[in-house]
Image (cartoon, rainbow, N blue to C red; front, side, top):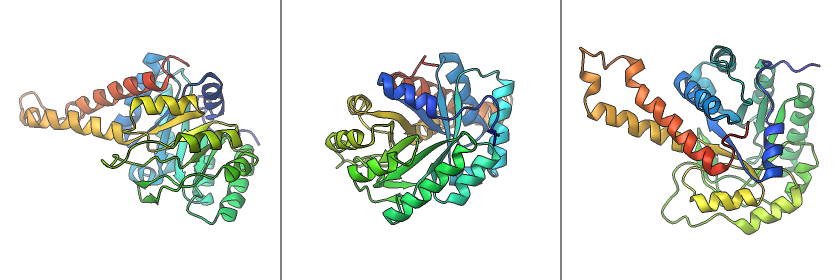
Amino acid sequence: MAKIYHKQLVSSKAMVDAAHKNKYAVGHFNINNLEWTKAILEAAQASNTPVILGTSEGAIKYMGGVKVVVGMVNGLLDELKITVPVALHLDHGQSLEMAKKCIEAGYSSVMFDGSHLPYEENIAKTKEIVAFAKKYEVSVEAEIGSIGGEEDGVVGQGELGDPKQASEMAGLGITMLAAGIGNIHGKYPEWWKTLSFETLESLQDAAKLPMVLHGGSGIPTEQVQKAISLGISKINVNTELQLSFRDATRTYIEARKDLDDEAKGFDPRKLLNPGFKAIQNTFNELTAIFGCKGKA
Protein backbone atom coordinates (compact mmCIF):
# COMPACT_ATOMS: atom_id res chain seq x y z
CA MET A 1 0.00 0.00 0.00
CA ALA A 2 1.38 3.40 -0.95
CA LYS A 3 1.84 6.10 1.64
CA ILE A 4 -1.18 8.40 1.79
CA TYR A 5 0.17 11.42 3.64
CA HIS A 6 0.76 14.64 1.76
CA LYS A 7 3.62 14.58 -0.71
CA GLN A 8 5.48 17.31 1.21
CA LEU A 9 5.21 15.60 4.59
CA VAL A 10 7.94 13.10 5.36
CA SER A 11 8.31 10.48 8.04
CA SER A 12 10.61 11.35 10.93
CA LYS A 13 13.02 8.52 10.12
CA ALA A 14 15.48 10.26 7.80
CA MET A 15 15.57 13.29 10.08
CA VAL A 16 16.29 11.44 13.32
CA ASP A 17 18.69 8.98 11.66
CA ALA A 18 20.79 11.88 10.32
CA ALA A 19 20.66 13.57 13.72
CA HIS A 20 21.74 10.36 15.47
CA LYS A 21 24.63 9.83 13.10
CA ASN A 22 25.86 13.42 13.27
CA LYS A 23 25.25 14.08 17.00
CA TYR A 24 22.53 16.72 16.93
CA ALA A 25 18.82 16.57 17.73
CA VAL A 26 15.77 17.42 15.64
CA GLY A 27 13.24 19.67 17.34
CA HIS A 28 9.74 18.31 17.86
CA PHE A 29 7.46 21.29 18.49
CA ASN A 30 3.90 20.77 19.70
CA ILE A 31 1.31 22.84 17.86
CA ASN A 32 -1.95 24.17 19.28
CA ASN A 33 -3.57 26.26 16.55
CA LEU A 34 -3.04 27.95 13.18
CA GLU A 35 -0.76 30.68 14.56
CA TRP A 36 1.45 28.11 16.30
CA THR A 37 1.81 26.01 13.17
CA LYS A 38 2.39 28.92 10.80
CA ALA A 39 4.98 30.48 13.13
CA ILE A 40 7.00 27.27 13.34
CA LEU A 41 6.83 26.48 9.63
CA GLU A 42 7.89 30.00 8.64
CA ALA A 43 10.79 29.94 11.11
CA ALA A 44 11.88 26.49 9.91
CA GLN A 45 11.83 27.58 6.27
CA ALA A 46 13.67 30.84 6.95
CA SER A 47 16.42 29.02 8.88
CA ASN A 48 16.56 25.94 6.59
CA THR A 49 15.75 23.67 9.52
CA PRO A 50 13.99 20.27 9.46
CA VAL A 51 11.11 20.10 11.91
CA ILE A 52 8.65 17.68 13.48
CA LEU A 53 5.22 19.13 14.25
CA GLY A 54 3.69 17.31 17.21
CA THR A 55 0.08 17.07 18.32
CA SER A 56 -1.07 15.56 21.58
CA GLU A 57 -4.48 13.89 21.65
CA GLY A 58 -5.76 16.86 23.65
CA ALA A 59 -4.50 19.34 21.05
CA ILE A 60 -6.06 17.30 18.25
CA LYS A 61 -9.43 17.45 20.01
CA TYR A 62 -9.00 21.18 20.66
CA MET A 63 -8.26 21.91 17.01
CA GLY A 64 -11.28 19.95 15.77
CA GLY A 65 -9.94 16.49 14.97
CA VAL A 66 -7.23 14.75 12.95
CA LYS A 67 -8.64 15.73 9.57
CA VAL A 68 -8.61 19.40 10.55
CA VAL A 69 -4.99 19.17 11.69
CA VAL A 70 -3.86 17.35 8.54
CA GLY A 71 -5.75 19.79 6.30
CA MET A 72 -4.30 22.80 8.09
CA VAL A 73 -0.72 21.54 7.93
CA ASN A 74 -0.96 20.46 4.30
CA GLY A 75 -2.55 23.77 3.32
CA LEU A 76 0.23 25.74 5.02
CA LEU A 77 2.91 23.62 3.37
CA ASP A 78 1.45 24.53 -0.01
CA GLU A 79 0.61 28.17 0.55
CA LEU A 80 3.85 29.03 2.40
CA LYS A 81 5.89 27.09 -0.19
CA ILE A 82 7.66 25.08 2.51
CA THR A 83 10.60 23.08 1.16
CA VAL A 84 12.34 21.95 4.37
CA PRO A 85 11.54 18.44 5.68
CA VAL A 86 8.40 18.48 7.83
CA ALA A 87 6.87 15.54 9.69
CA LEU A 88 3.43 15.54 11.33
CA HIS A 89 3.62 13.42 14.46
CA LEU A 90 1.13 12.05 16.99
CA ASP A 91 2.58 12.73 20.44
CA HIS A 92 1.81 10.29 23.27
CA GLY A 93 -0.81 8.31 21.41
CA GLN A 94 -2.55 6.31 24.12
CA SER A 95 -4.23 3.70 21.94
CA LEU A 96 -3.68 1.76 18.75
CA GLU A 97 -6.99 3.11 17.49
CA MET A 98 -5.80 6.70 17.76
CA ALA A 99 -2.44 5.96 16.17
CA LYS A 100 -4.11 4.17 13.25
CA LYS A 101 -6.66 6.97 12.88
CA CYS A 102 -3.87 9.52 12.57
CA ILE A 103 -2.00 7.42 10.00
CA GLU A 104 -5.12 6.94 7.90
CA ALA A 105 -5.87 10.67 8.08
CA GLY A 106 -2.42 11.54 6.73
CA TYR A 107 0.04 11.80 9.62
CA SER A 108 3.57 10.84 8.62
CA SER A 109 4.80 9.82 12.08
CA VAL A 110 3.19 8.48 15.25
CA MET A 111 4.06 7.72 18.83
CA PHE A 112 2.36 4.82 20.55
CA ASP A 113 2.89 5.39 24.26
CA GLY A 114 2.28 2.07 25.96
CA SER A 115 4.40 2.95 28.99
CA HIS A 116 1.27 3.00 31.18
CA LEU A 117 0.49 -0.61 30.21
CA PRO A 118 1.96 -3.87 31.51
CA TYR A 119 5.24 -4.33 29.64
CA GLU A 120 4.17 -7.39 27.63
CA GLU A 121 1.07 -5.53 26.44
CA ASN A 122 3.20 -2.52 25.51
CA ILE A 123 5.44 -4.82 23.43
CA ALA A 124 2.51 -6.53 21.70
CA LYS A 125 0.72 -3.30 20.79
CA THR A 126 3.94 -1.59 19.68
CA LYS A 127 4.63 -4.55 17.40
CA GLU A 128 1.14 -4.20 15.93
CA ILE A 129 1.45 -0.46 15.22
CA VAL A 130 4.90 -0.94 13.67
CA ALA A 131 3.43 -3.45 11.21
CA PHE A 132 0.48 -1.18 10.44
CA ALA A 133 2.64 1.94 10.01
CA LYS A 134 5.11 0.15 7.74
CA LYS A 135 2.44 -0.22 5.07
CA TYR A 136 2.12 3.57 4.96
CA GLU A 137 5.84 4.34 5.33
CA VAL A 138 5.10 6.10 8.63
CA SER A 139 7.74 6.32 11.38
CA VAL A 140 6.99 5.01 14.88
CA GLU A 141 8.13 6.16 18.31
CA ALA A 142 7.66 3.91 21.34
CA GLU A 143 8.18 4.46 25.06
CA ILE A 144 9.44 2.47 28.02
CA GLY A 145 9.64 3.61 31.61
CA SER A 146 7.67 6.83 31.79
CA ILE A 147 8.22 10.56 31.65
CA GLY A 148 7.48 12.29 34.94
CA GLY A 149 4.75 14.89 35.30
CA GLU A 150 1.59 15.49 33.29
CA GLU A 151 0.89 16.57 29.72
CA ASP A 152 -2.66 16.78 28.37
CA GLY A 153 -3.87 14.20 30.86
CA VAL A 154 -0.96 11.81 30.31
CA VAL A 155 0.58 11.28 33.75
CA GLY A 156 3.88 9.54 34.43
CA GLN A 157 5.66 8.80 37.67
CA GLY A 158 9.09 9.18 36.12
CA GLU A 159 10.39 5.60 36.15
CA LEU A 160 13.83 5.12 34.59
CA GLY A 161 13.99 3.07 31.40
CA ASP A 162 15.23 -0.51 31.48
CA PRO A 163 18.05 -1.39 29.00
CA LYS A 164 16.70 -4.91 28.46
CA GLN A 165 13.32 -3.48 27.48
CA ALA A 166 15.06 -0.90 25.27
CA SER A 167 16.80 -3.69 23.37
CA GLU A 168 13.56 -5.63 22.91
CA MET A 169 11.70 -2.53 21.72
CA ALA A 170 14.44 -1.71 19.23
CA GLY A 171 14.12 -5.22 17.84
CA LEU A 172 10.51 -4.56 16.86
CA GLY A 173 11.54 -2.16 14.10
CA ILE A 174 10.61 1.14 15.76
CA THR A 175 12.19 4.34 14.44
CA MET A 176 13.00 5.95 17.79
CA LEU A 177 12.61 5.28 21.49
CA ALA A 178 11.49 7.48 24.37
CA ALA A 179 12.52 6.39 27.84
CA GLY A 180 12.53 7.87 31.30
CA ILE A 181 15.95 9.30 32.18
CA GLY A 182 14.84 11.64 34.95
CA ASN A 183 13.01 14.03 32.61
CA ILE A 184 9.69 15.67 33.50
CA HIS A 185 6.86 17.19 31.46
CA GLY A 186 6.12 20.84 32.15
CA LYS A 187 8.10 23.24 34.35
CA TYR A 188 10.80 21.57 36.43
CA PRO A 189 10.42 21.74 40.23
CA GLU A 190 13.13 23.33 42.36
CA TRP A 191 14.22 19.97 43.78
CA TRP A 192 15.07 18.56 40.33
CA LYS A 193 18.83 18.38 39.73
CA THR A 194 19.88 16.40 36.68
CA LEU A 195 19.14 13.86 34.00
CA SER A 196 20.42 10.34 34.60
CA PHE A 197 23.18 10.18 32.01
CA GLU A 198 24.23 6.74 33.24
CA THR A 199 20.74 5.46 32.40
CA LEU A 200 20.84 7.15 28.99
CA GLU A 201 24.19 5.56 28.15
CA SER A 202 22.90 2.12 29.13
CA LEU A 203 19.73 2.57 27.09
CA GLN A 204 21.65 3.77 24.04
CA ASP A 205 24.09 0.87 24.25
CA ALA A 206 21.13 -1.51 24.37
CA ALA A 207 18.88 0.07 21.72
CA LYS A 208 21.45 1.52 19.29
CA LEU A 209 18.86 3.79 17.68
CA PRO A 210 17.71 7.42 18.00
CA MET A 211 16.45 8.30 21.47
CA VAL A 212 13.82 10.90 22.30
CA LEU A 213 13.91 13.43 25.12
CA HIS A 214 10.44 14.38 26.32
CA GLY A 215 9.98 17.12 28.87
CA GLY A 216 12.85 19.08 27.34
CA SER A 217 11.56 22.47 28.46
CA GLY A 218 13.65 23.82 31.32
CA ILE A 219 16.57 21.39 31.26
CA PRO A 220 19.88 23.34 31.43
CA THR A 221 21.53 23.76 28.03
CA GLU A 222 24.69 21.90 29.01
CA GLN A 223 22.61 18.88 30.08
CA VAL A 224 20.62 18.95 26.84
CA GLN A 225 23.78 19.01 24.77
CA LYS A 226 25.37 16.23 26.81
CA ALA A 227 22.25 14.12 26.29
CA ILE A 228 22.50 14.75 22.54
CA SER A 229 26.10 13.54 22.58
CA LEU A 230 24.89 10.32 24.24
CA GLY A 231 22.20 9.46 21.68
CA ILE A 232 19.26 11.86 22.09
CA SER A 233 18.23 12.65 18.51
CA LYS A 234 14.77 14.20 18.95
CA ILE A 235 13.76 16.71 21.60
CA ASN A 236 10.12 17.51 22.35
CA VAL A 237 9.24 21.12 23.13
CA ASN A 238 5.88 22.39 24.31
CA THR A 239 6.04 24.34 27.57
CA GLU A 240 8.78 26.72 26.46
CA LEU A 241 6.74 27.83 23.45
CA GLN A 242 3.63 28.24 25.59
CA LEU A 243 5.49 30.35 28.13
CA SER A 244 7.07 32.59 25.49
CA PHE A 245 3.67 33.05 23.84
CA ARG A 246 2.10 33.88 27.20
CA ASP A 247 4.77 36.40 28.16
CA ALA A 248 4.63 38.26 24.85
CA THR A 249 0.82 38.35 24.90
CA ARG A 250 0.79 39.57 28.51
CA THR A 251 3.21 42.39 27.64
CA TYR A 252 0.92 43.48 24.79
CA ILE A 253 -2.16 43.48 27.02
CA GLU A 254 -0.47 45.13 29.98
CA ALA A 255 0.57 47.93 27.62
CA ARG A 256 -3.19 48.24 26.92
CA LYS A 257 -2.61 47.96 23.19
CA ASP A 258 -5.65 45.72 22.90
CA LEU A 259 -7.76 48.66 24.15
CA ASP A 260 -6.60 50.97 21.37
CA ASP A 261 -9.82 50.93 19.36
CA GLU A 262 -8.56 53.46 16.83
CA ALA A 263 -5.61 51.22 15.91
CA LYS A 264 -7.85 48.13 16.22
CA GLY A 265 -5.52 46.60 18.77
CA PHE A 266 -8.28 44.13 19.56
CA ASP A 267 -7.96 42.52 16.10
CA PRO A 268 -6.78 38.92 16.71
CA ARG A 269 -4.18 39.39 14.00
CA LYS A 270 -2.62 42.14 16.11
CA LEU A 271 -3.41 40.66 19.52
CA LEU A 272 -1.74 37.35 18.69
CA ASN A 273 1.18 38.73 16.70
CA PRO A 274 3.58 39.32 19.63
CA GLY A 275 3.09 35.71 20.73
CA PHE A 276 3.52 34.54 17.14
CA LYS A 277 6.90 36.28 16.94
CA ALA A 278 7.89 34.98 20.38
CA ILE A 279 7.28 31.41 19.21
CA GLN A 280 9.60 32.01 16.25
CA ASN A 281 12.30 33.52 18.47
CA THR A 282 12.13 30.56 20.84
CA PHE A 283 12.21 28.12 17.92
CA ASN A 284 15.38 29.77 16.60
CA GLU A 285 17.05 29.77 20.01
CA LEU A 286 16.27 26.12 20.72
CA THR A 287 17.14 24.73 17.29
CA ALA A 288 20.53 26.42 17.61
CA ILE A 289 21.05 24.66 20.96
CA PHE A 290 19.89 21.33 19.53
CA GLY A 291 22.29 21.68 16.58
CA CYS A 292 19.61 21.08 13.92
CA LYS A 293 19.35 24.69 12.76
CA GLY A 294 20.28 24.92 9.08
CA LYS A 295 20.43 21.13 8.67
CA ALA A 296 17.59 20.77 6.14
